[in-house]
Length: 149
Image (cartoon, rainbow, N blue to C red; front, side, top):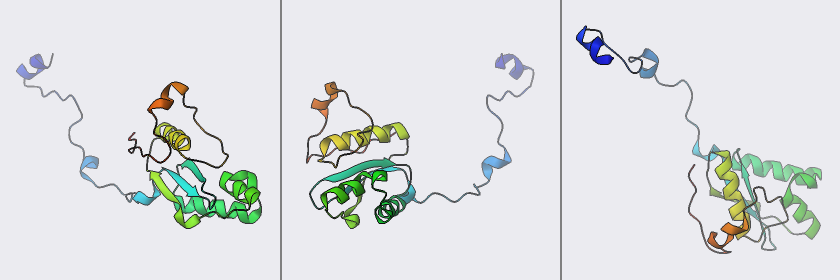
């Protein structure tokens, strides 16, 4: 069909011709990489860790966990509840990002893998990993590469 139009001197575009908005820069600021969604862990002095995924930035989540502790909302945070029950201290300063993963489902899967491979505080395991995959998962103390969405 485009050959017929070409012979008639008619230009055929399979996509829109260059438009002004494609040449202009976005009015939005680029997101700071530290605000990306992620899987993170918070250690407790007893040796257990709290592993969880979030779509929010880590400093904000840590502030929320501390606020739950301060207000006595122990059921709103598994690490705070564990700390309260066992009378252990949470090492807030040692909290670390395990993997920055944007997409929600891969983040949930990575969270489940990390919960499986660490000695974690009692918490919701999130996504259930079938027993058939367990031999392929890293064991405690080993590492896994970052999952990319």
